[in-house]
Image (tube, rainbow, N blue to C red; front, side, top):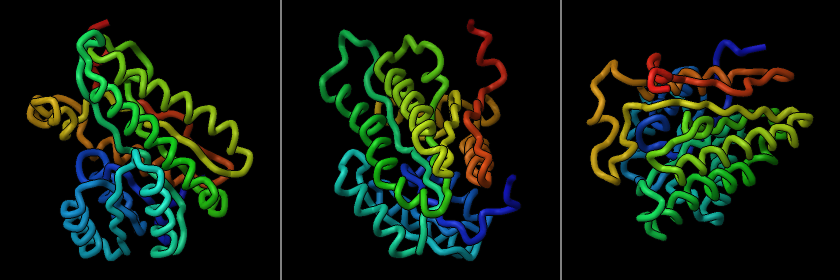
Length: 247
């Protein structure tokens, strides 16, 4: 069964200050959900929170935090429940890429990807599960094409996304009987700020209409969040149509 909207639901989105995260905030708010916005850039979070609160007449909660810090994640989840009253869905979106070639990758590049993409996903899931059990809620992980197929351009980034997908699937086996849904949404290239830390962002690299837009991924996330027990969406692949041409 699928709900017509997310009204009276509370959704927490990590990496909410831009790209897929920001688009997801707007999408779930347009469906009536109250939303908690988690990222490190507090100014951008507050601007977005004010915009969606005014446009969609929903409650918002800004929780500046670094997902690689377990204490900050725990405090953010607790603050969300205290402020908004429940936790019905969590979107584990925070992630990044660093470096490229394994032989030249620095310790800092390697560690940063592991800290955010792997540890951050674990901490967010761990702190959210008890509340999602209470609400029969849904945990959505933003995976990647790189977590399903080889990515020669950055094997370590790919490995973090393979880990995330394996963790999500196995976690689903552990908590699915308690009516917690777990979904992985796997995009290919998305026109966003991804890559800006290393130089040219995907937003600058690709023209509109050339690859997937953040709003299209957000639509998939909202569809997953709208499922009612006993149903969940396991995997959603959001690929650009020519993605397999290189194979």
